Amino acid sequence: MKQKYKITSEQAKEIRSKIKGYEKTSAFRKLQAIMLLGEGESIEAVSQTTFYHPTYVYELVKKFCVHGFEQFTKDGRGGAHRMNLTKEQEEQILDKFKEKAIKGQVVSLGDVKREYERVRGKETANSTFYNFLDRMDWRRVMPRGAHPKKASDEAIQASKKLTFS
Image (cartoon, rainbow, N blue to C red; front, side, top):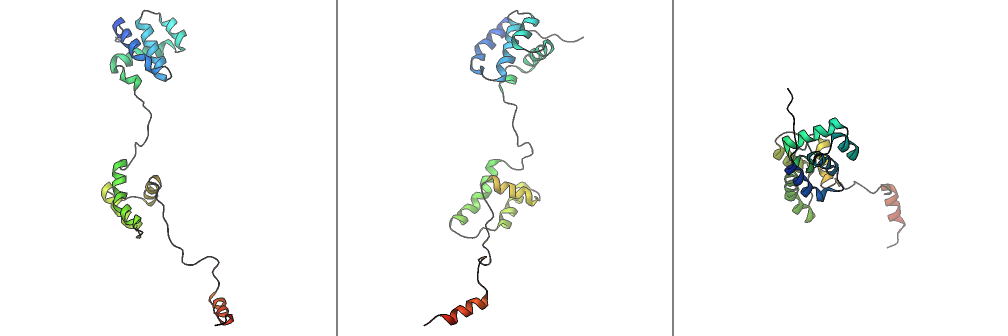
């Protein structure tokens, strides 16, 4: 037999006192449905007030009884479930190389990648590593070999012959 979950009038009063700060959130309507049911409203009246299906109202009551008030107030959204390192770890890796970069010295991305893999504990794909650098606002800067509009060596020598000393 299924267990029936009930909201007492004390729980409804507790919800009413805590619900004040959640007027503009999705938690407000859910808590309002539980609170109205606990204050003695019929399931049909609660359903019409909150625009929730009666079955869903009962599900909300069950969640409240099992998990409590925090189930509705915490933000369940979020990402970085497959994150390799924490933000602090990532910042610590780059802090080691930041001083060198500020001094104007060349920072080898191979060294940074080896440090990243050492902290992570396993080998890392280049795309993952470059995404890490992008997140940290680092970019790969390489000097080009020559200016794209550089004259040929023959033109440079011919120019030298034309100048008067």
